[in-house]
Image 1 (cartoon, rainbow, N blue to C red):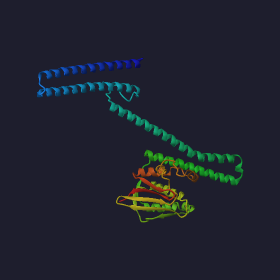
Image 2 (image 1 turned 180 degrees about the horizontal axis):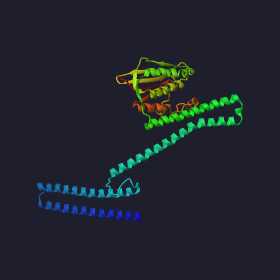
Image 3 (image 1 turned 90 degrees about the vertical axis):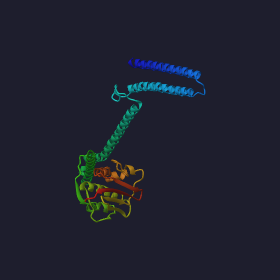
Image 4 (image 1 turned 135 degrees about the vertical axis):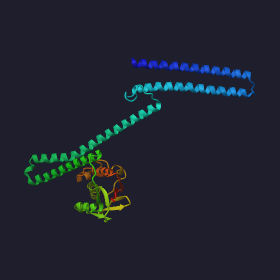
Length: 349
């Protein structure tokens, strides 16, 4: 009842405003006609006073129309804003606020943007939880299957028992890697991990990582080559940059599925920065996949990555570490020819 009464009162008010505006315009027009008729009877057509009165009449008509129309538009806009505000959230427009259509539009646009952002965050949360559950499900189901098989009597067979226990160990290790990587990303994003800057030779660090991954490269018959062995000193968190290099070089080894696979690492310098480039001649990345490779759990080749036991978080961690250093990492790739990752570090003085 209250809403209908409010609508009826607005309707009556609008009609009254229209009647008042019509009376004002009618009175103004009659006055102008009388004034113009008087001028026409008292002055000659050739007299300059006639044109003066004509011009004066036009000016008066213009201003009267302007102020009446402006008044009507303001009254109409207030009425419409009042109607719109009744269907908007209570905290969006305060009763005492004088809001015009432009401000109202900006308020609505702001709220629409916030709603869109909340929807995107909700979609991201669902996708993220789905990815986490999917990644954890595979090793957990494997562990469950092996344990049930052992409980059903396979534990009596020493060969089967040892083989299944090894596989359970591998699945547990994969679970630990996923949890560790998730914890790392969460801490990087929240800023809980502080970087420990130090001066070190990035090429010496690359050599140490080559030694660490030597066996892995041999299993893939891949060659690791450092193109610029001279010392290049940088100022960064050595442990975090080591993790970046391990992830990138290890990925290059895993994707080197061709004869004479080669991973080349090159460092160049300018006055302020040292640039590290890691190139391989592996399978490359399809153009449509390039924009997404730094996303959590995104896999260029899903089945092979899951077989190798990766968490799917390596490149996401790499990106966060470089952002923590206030540096970017870029990727270029040609499908079936190779991939190149490039990042820069502040050069030590």
